[in-house]
Image (cartoon, rainbow, N blue to C red; front, side, top):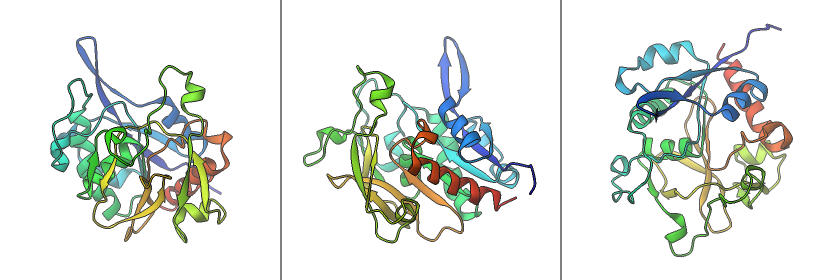
Length: 249
């Protein structure tokens, strides 16, 4: 067996730290790719249209779109203006929104988490609720920021897995799994060509796949990267993603 590992690109956030801009990726995502997917993580700067997407897709064996404190700017999905103080990252939007469908069309495996989940829905023409906790009938899916990280990322509720879907297979045929919950946004209208893989008890879509994708193309609203190797389902999810990426080598 070859000792080579696949290369998985992780598009970065662009943040101002003092007067200068930095392109950043969370360590928990980087280490999940390394340890659970068995791949080499490659951080991709948020350069938008200046990024050579075709060359990038020829060089990588997979892409993971990570979570972030920032939200997709609502003009991308015909949404109402954001509340004052909402953090946005237009450079990341300009990088990820065109890249996701191009990667899927090219057969490059894609895993989207939290903000990445929202990006994939928007990239396929879907829309978002900006504050689920203010929508009648939906629960508050946010974490308690006053609690330690271990508590914020602890299992918060179950999700029901779609019968016969990828996630149900990874769960060994189980109908439900427990997940954490650290988001205020959620799917309002599901994008075209996407298939629901999991839903929260209040009906919020928690995972979906690209129906006609040539390879692995999945988005989850929760955070499987958190202590991934301590959770059997998260380990299986990243292993499946890593295997799809190795198949591209």
